[in-house]
View: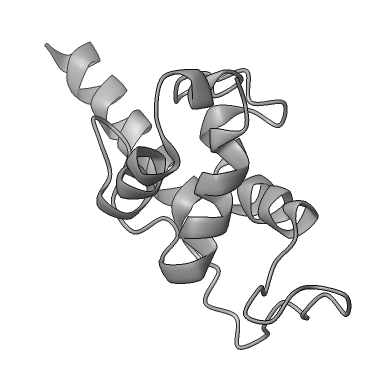
Length: 113
C-alpha cells in the first residue's frame, strides 16, 4: 500500500512539474509571411509541444509518463485533441495549453498519422 501511495505521489509530482509554468509575459512573434489571423507556424506548435508536453509524451512523441502521440491523428480529430489538451483526460491535467496555443498544437498533432 505504501508503494502505491509513493508511486501516485511521484507521478503527480512529475505531471505537475512538467506541465506547470509558462506564464511568461513574452509572446511568440508572429510569422512575417503568415496569413492574417495566423499567429503560429508548425515550428511554433512543435516548440510549444516541446515546452509543455514533451516531458510526459517524449521529445519524439514516443511516450513516457504519458502515451505515445506518434500516430495520435489517426485516432483523434483536431477537435478531439484540442479538447483533451484543454480539459485533460486520464492522468493528463487540464489547461496545459489554452486558446490559440492549444488549437495550434492540436492541429500539429492531428497531422501525426
